[in-house]
Length: 328
Image (cartoon, rainbow, N blue to C red):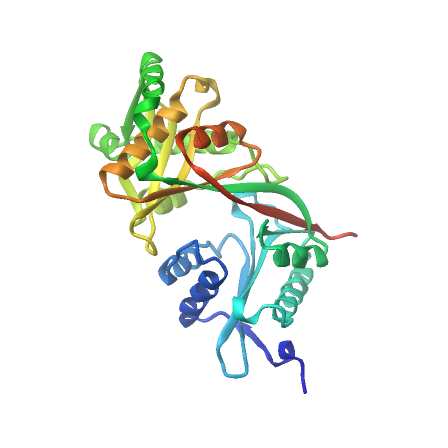
């Protein structure tokens, strides 16, 4: 009788696979709601004219999608021979050799492409996932934490001094919505500040960051339907944008918000601006009836992790970044 993994058929991803993919992710991470539309959106917004990728699905003998995997270039720190690779198997089909077969398939494809570095990730409390990556020669190189704030338990009033410190430094906390009304042509300046802040943040990736193209920033961070223009907070000093903290809705959990980049230009740090921005996002969540704010931070970003802890964010198990270097 053939091994279970040998009965699996690996094929190219189809448009109708996203419901199955989402169910695989929910089965593995039930505490992280997601929707098929969010998965499809992530797939469709990848610019295949600039970067390479391949997604595959694994069907069992009954034609059910029980696993999927992908490889893709890394737009955030692009190198032509560096890729992300990811494999996910439905929790009911773990330890049947399906993930191993998928990973071998994807690494084989990357070998054909001449990949020299391959990056993947796993959560620290999923020992089977970390062991799986290590078996394939992946080594840990960085960690990141998701932190979650139960909004009702937070008390921003006890940190009012940070908002005052920012004001004393000549900083005004505003929103993208208000700035678009005040200065309709403000978007290029905000993008420039966003890019400067983003690349100045502590980075886990061994390669230098690649600035996000203006049109992609507009699409994903300004005009996307999950963007909240009145929840995109900016710190402005005169005519200069010096900090930001933006919130996005989620489709899968309408009472949860995802916090995007929170950052301040290096020369304006140490003035309470980042904390003041975060306090505004907490007030926003409370006023609009949201239950929770979720955010991700590198383990190397100690100042932001300290701010999160101070405000009441609860740190979740770490996500471990792994890298596999192909030897010549």
